[in-house]
Image (tube, rainbow, N blue to C red):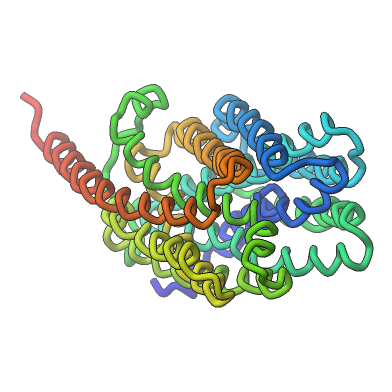
Length: 414
């Protein structure tokens, strides 16, 4: 089955997952950070204070997600969409109208929980269940929704803020969720898709369905997270402090905004390639390689002050982001099955949100202490290379465990 044929035959489900991640952009750090300078100015916050506030609100959303995120195991993707999109729109309205620091914290909490958290949770859990043999391809298209948002929304928001102000721009964001996102997504995901265990061009490895408790007792679960958390931690940190980085380097913020287009383009390309590789080789086998471009990106951004380093960073980061976004969707059902996928994913997404919360908070605190920001970025690059070595052994261990389980299931019982 060709990729275009696959997209044609499954257009409604692929489009539904794509739009969920596309509109999750409004709760992603790269989008919220576009208002960071205005927020700090109006509320009188330092880099460290803003980072700490953002971290606390995000941590609260991460603590909520493991429990609330289980609704995707109980209700359909359509029902969940009807709940989370209006709440996300409400959070955008609150951002536009907030005048008090406490309301700002609640606003960030809701944006993170229902934007980055539940919109992605709904998309990846639904698509992970709807597809089997072609899961990699389906998830790769779903994953690039947020990258399409990265390519489109920053530029639109910057120009909208110049024209009508940053607060009114958030009102436009809320309107787009109610007028465009809600009716489109809810209609697309209204019909469930039955997964097929065998389709032309793909294989479905046999795997038992682990409960969330079993997954949390599995050492490999935490070792995997040491790798898959890195892109979110690093990307969020750089996006959150993008205004500070631009000021530090003496760059143009308008030029820096254009680097998102490069990152998003390469992310889309690498995600689609990764989808095919996942279907052919498995997500587990791709684990050792996906952090290497991100490590290179961090070292370049740390060492080079010229503005071209921003383009190099975004380009290499896009390569890692594309593969990691597909991996993050395909890895968990591949390793732990689909029966309790929502509950397991709720924990992994919560930990990812936790990582994205810690990045801005820790780096903002270190900036206030006088630790050079480029030095911090360089340390992140070194971590990527160390984690890649760890992922090599994790990949080998998971592959061996899968083969052992397959042999055991194939052995006749006396």
